[in-house]
Image 1 (tube, rainbow, N blue to C red):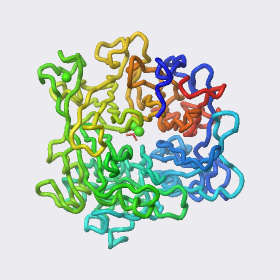
Image 2: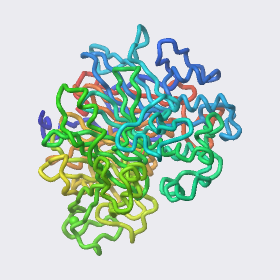
Image 3: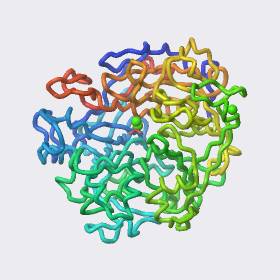
Image 4: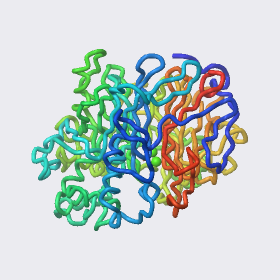
Amino acid sequence: HGGQGGPGGGISFEPVPPNTDDALRVPRGYRSSVVVRWGDPVLPDAPAFDFDDQSAEAQAKQFGYNCDFVTLFPLGRDRGLLWVNHEYTDEALMFRGYTTGDAATEEQIKIAMAAHGGAVVEVERARTTGQWKLVTKGRRRYNRRVTAQTPMRFTGPAAGSDLLKTAADPRGVKPLGMLNNCAGGTTPWDTVLTAEENFNQYFVNGDKVPAEQAPYIARYAIPSGVSGRRFDRIEERFDLAKHPNEVNRFGWIVEIDPFDPDATPIKRTALGRFAHEAATTSLARDGRLVVYMGDDSRFEYVYKFVSKERYRRGNDRHNRTLLDEGTLYVAKFTGDSPAAEIDGSGKLPTDGEFDGSGEWIPLVTGDKSHVAGMTAVEVLVYTRVAADKVTATKMDRPEDVERNPVTGAVYVALTNNSNRAAAQTDEANPIAQSKHGHVLEIVERRDDAAATTFAWSIPLVCGDPNDASTYFAGYDKSKVSPISCPDNLAFDRDGNLWISTDGSRLGGHDGLFVMPVRGRERGHVRQFLTVPIGAETCGPMVTEDQRSVFVAVQHPGEVDGASPDQPASRWPDGDQPRPAVAVVWHDKGKKIGS
Ligand code: FEO
Ligand code: CA
Ligand code: CA
Ligand code: CA
């Protein structure tokens, strides 16, 4: 691996100041452009986008809404396949006069269903710059849309179990569609792992399920009554009064092969069911495959899966079975400072750090449960309940989890937690009513991803650096950018941590930041870009050659009361706002961050 490129960690750009511009702002010397927007043709026969003449048939062939996880699979030096998640839809911004799911037209609901899921698009790079563009001509044989209605299959220990059976699928093996795919990851055999997050919101009548299911419905916050997008008006399966098990068929990690547009996406049940965030793979010292995952809700947990068998380079057939058998663990964090020194204010304990030790508690191995009173299938389908029983540590919205390719340390973004009382703080979640969130670093024992114990510390407590509650790894706080609500994480090849934010509470817009995590520059947070009004920053992805960084600009214009007649943002075209993937590169072809 390369070094850090000098004392600045290779990072030397002048930070973008906080702002509220309706624009994608990048540092001096950098340029940006939109790669692909909501509605752009994905399949070769897709019609051109027309905001005032949308149809579900067209949307199913066009780029979906609210792009989130982004990753690039190279097809040679200047071509590639971009995978993008389409997390959810903002109907009030997509359709004129939209009020509620009850009043929506059936076509509008069908459009929303088709705008969920994900997309594979072929992209190409201009030879002389880091700019990537959508390929708009030719066969584009890999291009694909996955939606809320794409046929999928279950594998792993819970596939075919009673909890996954429905009237339409009495064998419990063929779910339809994926929902709320937020972050994700890739496998060493070049497939996508895409994470179903807040799937609960798509179902109605959660209060009308059989009594034995009710506690699980509550634990997964499935809505009561009939409201929301009303997918149930199009497909009865979203009504839990009629099909109570349908909700168990969402909330999984889905594996998709971007190189085979006909391949059936696979919901991997061995990885558990929760509001999945991230699925970062890594190889253990002995070659077993490890997947790090978060559950992004207040007081939820951090998980990892360790495969039973080892990865074998080049043996695709074998490798594609790895995610079906292994052990699912949940993390427990123990502080090393006296509890009385953790008062919720962010004041560092006398040992100078929020830190301690931790263990990965096994929940299930193959079809053997480690949780008293629960079968293996129950642990996998009702994973949150299993984690409660083993007293794992309740975290401040664990979102992305990423492993540093240079040092092997693992980083967890903890976005915020307005509900944590001072009495509920612990050394791993030390801020009461955390508004700005923090980033936690895990060092696995012997730097082995399969280890069952680890050391941890908190290098970054976010917020306004003038605020005493913040901590930037001891770096001079007069020199850092304010940062709030860390969400997605990524590493560049030099091991610098890139952090995108969602829901900044500091007055400025969300954006992308970089922080070296080693040496004298550790903690030196600098803002690399800001996004338009109402948007959060997702993705991010620094290409292997470090000449380009992709970001997903999700939900521009998502502001209370905004509508197509009164848009809050006009990004990117000066017209209706359109969620889009953008790319940023240096004018002179320098490494991103220079
Ligand atoms: Fe979809 Fe946890 O953000
Ligand atoms: Ca997110
Ligand atoms: Ca400590
Ligand atoms: Ca988020």
